Length: 272
Image (cartoon, rainbow, N blue to C red; front, side):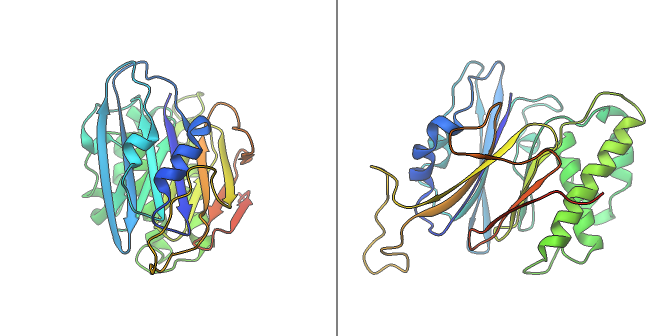
């Protein structure tokens, strides 16, 4: 079973401490087969990636992936493949310009839908598809929805536009899959541009927690004179899991959790 984790904070030096503090809540089970994991993180206007393979039977620690990373917004994913092999192009998070995306679940009847999903994309997005996964095509359909709304390139898209693009894409995939299979699609995912982070709960359960205050024994100390000196670490962590970790809040099925750069959290269920 895969796992996704999203992190938004008020400081760039707290990710490793936050991952240590949340280790029991975030720890995925040992992988049953070969797997892969990755992180996308933001440093100003730049988006960086790290992706690594995992042997069968490993019990990964997120601090191994996020250690030494300086960022106030990150998206992490552990993938045990159901569609596509272990190539880097098939490993989450996926990226297009400043947008990054990770998905947990499987689009039902994807083999029957793949060509139609590709054909439904604008040319510039179709050319950007590199791998074989349902997740990457799901992402590109969200990007297509943002493009139609004029929200793909703007510096600060309205959250209503981003929610609409994410929800519309999930609804389209569900409807297309129902024409070929009665099996439900798992469409839980997280999308971020480094400013807004959105998590859609459509399959795997999704949870979040807000932390505001020092982390016992783990609070990093900003360098004196730095812009973040003396700022108490605050962050929001969003994750999937089979059961809610202690103190985490559940996102209702069909709901979207939105975290903004001021660490305000809003949970809604889009209409339609």
